[in-house]
Every structure is written in structure tokens, then in C-alpha cells.
Image (tube, rainbow, N blue to C red; front, top):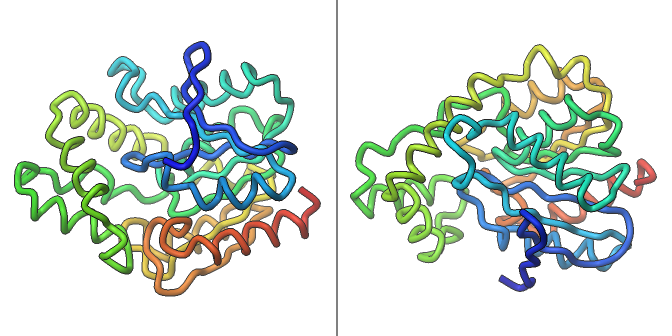
Length: 254
């Protein structure tokens, strides 16, 4: 990881740059380092980038759900003393960002989602019946990306370790169920926050039609595509992702 982890109160987080706060929300199996390029780029552009470690595996099982994580995010924003923030979320992080925006719209200046859950969850907690088979897990990790080479041994090892840890697997399945329970189709038309949707055209986890549905349901959204790109656009095409996000922020005065 290129950036040092800060530990304050109940929070572990990365912080870089000065200016308007952008809070980045990682996915279910996404490490904070997945956003190194975002952190480097925007921390030099007049933004303070913060990436809190979400308590995905440390919350009690009863609190292992999207709503609890959205409240945790709110508590973090209050702890940092921010009135308004920009949220950027990938996968489960996008869902948490959306749910937080639904609950606390006044604290979210702008929202960016990429490969977000919230409408379509079938791939999230499935396919772990052969979790002890390294090659099966490797293939599952590679399927997240358009280019399988992006799934380095380090990434595959981390996913393998997670799904073979009984406690983490139980929490993973609990989150998958929670994501289905907290489907946001009915909420989105009432959410007026300006939203930038950046999506991989070749996303197998949350397919392109999910992005189209998000765009049609959110009143103030814009949709941008990245070609030859899977579920984690900020990792697979970091420069293009940063340029799209930066241009959108500038155009809208954020």
C-alpha cells in the first residue's frame, strides 16, 4: 500500500491531500490499495482523499448489513468534522454510498458509483461451495476483471484466505443477503444528489444493464462507459477513470 494507515478512535483510514473531502468506499473483497491511483491523482488536485476500512468482518453478525455500514460512514464523517463530502464507492462500497445518501442527503455533495450493488446482487455471495479449491477461487477472482492478469497472485491469495476463514465467509454471506434485502429500486427516484456513474462495459458481476437502470432511476445522474473493463474500473483503467471523474467534478463545480 502506497499510503500509510492512520488509526484514530475506532477508525483505520488512509488520508491524503488537502481540500474538499472525497471519501472512498471499498468493496466486499476490495483492499484500500485498489484506490491508490485515485488517491494519488485527486490528493494532488485540491481534494482530501479518505479511505476508511469498513468493519465488514468486525461488526457483530446482527450488524453486518448495508444499513449499519452506512451509519458507520455517517459516524466517520461526524468524527472528521465534515458538513459535506463527495462519496466514491465501488461494488458494495457503492451500495453503502447510495444508502448513506438516502439516509443523510444533506451531508453528500456528490456521489460517484462504479460497479455498484443495490439493484442486482446475484453474483455477490454465490459460488463459494468449492472454496477450498484454489483454482476455482482464482477463476472467480479473474472473472471480476476484463483482463484476468489484473487478478494478481496477491489478490487471489487474499480472496482465497477470506472465503476459507469461517467467520469471514459467514459475514460475506450475511452481507450478500443484506444487499438483496436493501434493494434500492424504490428509493433511487427520490434521491436528488448529483451522481456520476462510471461502469465497465464488460462487467460480469454487475452487468451493463445495471448501470443503465441506475441511470434511469436516479434523477440527477450521468453515465460514463469504460471499454474493455470489468467490475473494478479504477483498478483496470485508472487513468481513464480518474479523467472521467475529474471532468465530471469540474463541470459540476465540485
